Image (cartoon, rainbow, N blue to C red):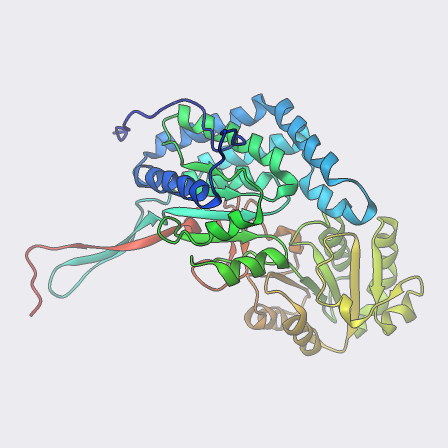
Length: 442
């Protein structure tokens, strides 16, 4: 039987529209009003039926398609304000929307609607010697604050994942995407409310002042967890000033190590995909490590293909000896998240040197090995410290959709609660439930 949902106000949310009060609210008043509304919504959203949530998600996806022209117009304002230059292209690509990308956003929401609802799942129910049963039940976390930069699709993915997992969300995108994110959030929240979702379940912060973020990070009474997605400056601000637990979605300095006996064609294909398919993403390869015995069979052909695709390759001395067209790399190139068609390459003596390099320069995001040796593959999986470790596969596959999660709220680089792509289950926690028949503590 579907849960009976109390009637809600079906007028469009105003959270996602710029404030036009004659006397604007102070930063503190503005933030507190938003988070209190989200907390109020979270109490009702936690008990919303799966059917109602899925209906809302479908309406949200339909809304994005119906408002494609409005979203693209808003995105164009952001792109014009952002400007264009070669050094900005990677960020502009993350910001840019197209009709195809809007369709992909809508499709992602529809995929989330098809996924199993984790809320209410019972885990590990067992009977104790005294006859009582003890287990855990999945429940929503509550209110999730998401602070992010650049990508407007984060607004849609985050709102959809939070809704399906029974959480209210407070979304604060970067100033570079304010028009795009405001429009997307408005469309989503209006569609959700008309489907019976409580007002405030999708709350968008439409003021771009830096002190709004600082104030948001103080709201530990109303927000249960903060998820930041962005550059080092954002991460530093959040981790230093938050009173709320933080699950970091930090930079992606991703490596591929091509082992001594790697299949050459496979190695070239994987490395090319990991760098070229979409270089502006956090799971794109930034450094390629090649065993010295594989360097000659692999590097000349791979470098040629990469350079044809517009990639600037920066290599160590041994790389330059095989590929003179490569630019010399310096120490600052290793450990760099380029987010652009730039790749650092280093030839290493063995797997030990490769793993030492990854331990020193990696960001614990995604690491991969290309090898035909089972023992070294298992050793790499066991010893490399990262949210995702891959054998004979592109780093670009570390993605919630590719992993079958429907979508992701981000890729966690921390060890607390969730690590790697965060989907529905990672947006829940558990509570103990006990079924007794009069048991007492002796």
